[in-house]
Image 1 (cartoon, rainbow, N blue to C red):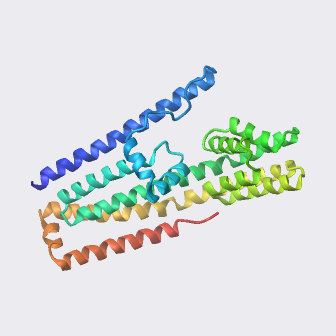
Image 2 (cartoon, helix red, strand yellow; image 1 turned 90 degrees about the vertical axis):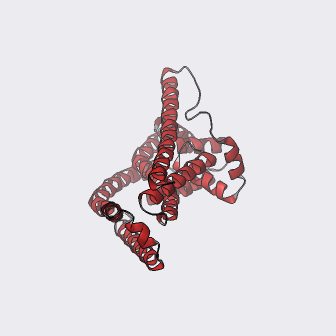
Length: 312
């Protein structure tokens, strides 16, 4: 089987994976839209995110393993409507597709490298989705603090105020607070439920808010003044975080651009002299040189990402 056939197979497989992912996103968005329409028109309907699960047999098997349980916990933290089995199948398809494409377009040596990159990309995607959800939740904290302050000022209990905030706020704050109120309805304490919320979405702002609510609940004092002062502080921190992210966007973009330039250089070299990468990686010294180069790119990428990560 020549390189063009492998490239065609890999491209077809990658297109299939992207098509399945696109269908999944479309089905999820359509279900959420129908649920929102049902909620606004007060006609009932199925809950948001309800859909037919795929790869149920794979999901049952993988949930029994420690890796499957860890994947499911991380998916729950991201808010994605995916099961561990679905995510594992999508990642496996991406690994196979990139392996075939790299083997055909570059050299067989780069197939395993591309497979490892696909695994890293899947893990990075989960981290990115989790951080994105945390950032969105932090952006809603000033409004959450304002709702809680107004509710407690009206004489409502903290449990009732949290339930009201869950109904008023959009996702992800609304979903997380709905989970909190459901746990409170089952008899769990406010300290435990709010502590688990801070563990799921770790941030300094949320820790401050949770600490304020927990201490006020234990002492039995009023939280109106504290929450209103906290609302102003959270709003200022929100603007500061936005400015810092804007200032560091160039550094983060450069961290992703440099590895892409290296990949483009290899593709250009192989296109100018067909089979040059295969001949180079066919020798142990050539393989060592490629591994060292990839390691240096990885060190540079990690270093630039560290420079572009500032805790506010």
